[in-house]
Image 1 (cartoon, rainbow, N blue to C red):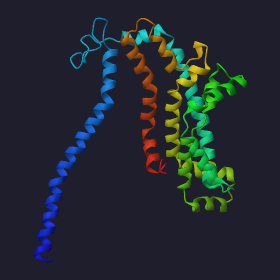
Image 2: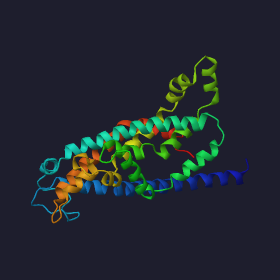
Image 3: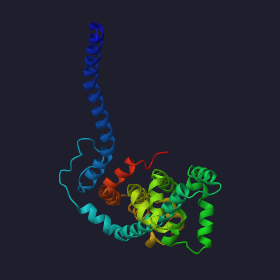
Image 4: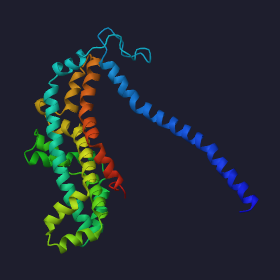
Length: 291
């Protein structure tokens, strides 16, 4: 190596070494900003929920830390409205929604990925195109069909119209596409039928993607608001997102109690994510969400 090449190499290394501390600083600053944007509303809700009746709920940042923390607002959230009943309704909707979505999305994704049939590409294109349509576009027609089936004011009527997600089908399709053909061929050569190949070979290979679909399905089911508000008329059947609206009266509302109820509503999705985060990240790593 010539002296000129050595000098050029040294300058490049020095340049990279000079840039790396700046890059690290910028990354840390950006991460802290993003973390602040995410956590600031949550901390503010927690602060408000822990404040007593005599404390202000509008000052910032001086009143961020409650002077006399209390859990009375969480108790009031359960006594002011039947919050426990609303939570059970949301749990039932979420369990039904996740179960049906998992079954339908997994089977449909497997068929679109591994079973050749005429017009499969067109079917996938049309299916993905429908994902761009908001639910409000078909709200009236869905209401008429649901009422015609006698499912108005039932939890099944809340679940079925949105029982399977197009995104979930696409996630499972991409996961099954990523499995090498040799694995399926080896199972067939060993005498495994279609059902056993799917259940014992293919499905365990995409367990990470199944976790992704389960978490996304739970969050979608738990966050339902507009459709339950339209299809349900009996307050006893309301999910928690609809039921907590009764905490805000026509003339007054206790922001402390509302904040406490909001934190209670947020807890189950966060708990599900933390319990399944390893499987979710595994599903993302195996390319579950790649186009």
